[in-house]
Image 1 (cartoon, one colour):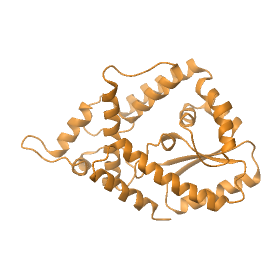
Image 2 (cartoon, one colour; image 1 turned 30 degrees about the vertical axis):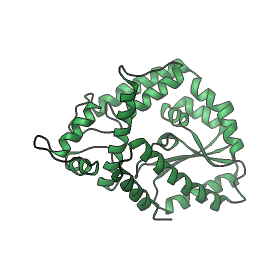
Image 3 (tube, one colour; image 1 turned 90 degrees about the horizontal axis):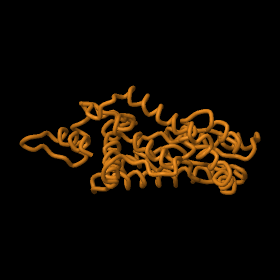
Length: 275
């Protein structure tokens, strides 16, 4: 089990070499993780998981995983009990023993609403929720009764807070899209901007897309995911900053080559900014 990280890296390298697009690569890595985590959940919690639903949230819920991405999961229950909390701990220890970086929460249905209304990061993470294993009835109750409140309660306030957080993030990570060492996730024009568009669209009942061809946004998303996966592999760790010393390695992994006019890294950056 401890070789799961190596398996993810090998699979990502294989897919990139074969010319797979970024979305398909992320979906494949997510699927491998899903199967691995389900196995551990079922082995550890066999006979003890009644009333517990294991839920993927955040980037993992979006199926937007790179080789070293953090894995965010939630143990969802109708009511807390010593048995359910102990079972959740056992499963977490097994996951941590494999070397995976797992962020976790243990929430009741009521906790989801209360905590989601308090903190925008929790609310947006729960908006990406996806059933993994355990008691599906608990998750279905969440989707039927709780999810709608998370999505639409205090809708105007949520939309305003999302935009304020977006402004803060861009100020912190650089307001220009033409940074020499961009953050592929948090920087302007990065993945978080695409996530923000998705959140706003789902809550506002209308399409929220930037001017231009929607296909261009899809292509940009694919390229960002592919570049981030390559960056993880070259870095050997979770990393979203495309720094100078890593740009050549990433560009080579993407199959780019030097020309008479441009280095492979320069071609990659031109593609990044053009998309």
